Amino acid sequence: MEPFVLKNQSFLTIESWIKQFPSLAVGMTTKNGGVSKGDYETLNLGFHVGDELSAVCSNREKVSELLEFPLNNWVGAEQTHGIQLKKISKEDRGKGSHSYENSIKDTDGFYTNEEGILLSLCFADCVPLFFIAPDSKMIGIAHAGWKGTVGQIAKEMISAWGREGINPQEILVAIGPSICEKCYIVDKRVINLVENTLVDVEILPYNLINDGQYSLDLREVNRQIIIKSGVPVTNILMTGFCSSCDKEFFSHRRDQGRTGRMLSFIGWKETTNCL
Image (cartoon, rainbow, N blue to C red; front, top):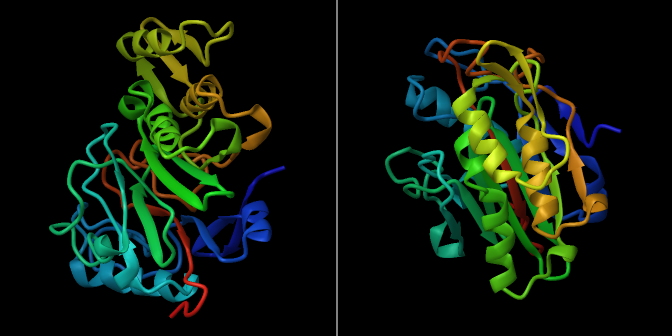
């Protein structure tokens, strides 16, 4: 069953997590339901893609209202396709929420166990990874393109949580809407890196389609890394939505680089006051 459920035209959520943890905001936006003054369709939430700042801020305010999570409590990153993570505290709130310039630099993953913080990252084909350890209230999100995937940002998150005293068997993970294997074509150089990352996997998640070109299941690569890192298979959810096939998403590949960005997010709402 598809774990990501469309709540309205503007965002999806992880239904089973929301039912289990009612104070959790978690999910991913679509490209529908906003405004644009640039070349992008409606709900672009990325500051760095050429859309007008006023349009992006208006869209962010709309999502803030839909989620009942104040924009001043969001945290955003300057994503660089690396594996750098940052533990976030309330002192970081507002960084990257209203502009790209004050976002947290050179970071592709966030985690926190504090309430009143919405961790957010931008996507347009790369794999969003959502993490939660319910007993410790630790939550996290990571951005895994092919570089972050073979760099094993998923393992980095699980290892970071291990240093916080969290056993991998306590962690739940959801792999979100991103480009599917049919749409994601890469060269042998990338496949070599995947093979080096998954050295002991019997069935590798790619197929040769013609000379030097392969279709790669980037979501499955991340799933295998997460399993190898000690998270039980039964703790992992994986979407069937493809950002390229499904027209309600922005897609860097489908739109040849000229496209907006969805926002993936996770945060505990403050139990005393959500507004």
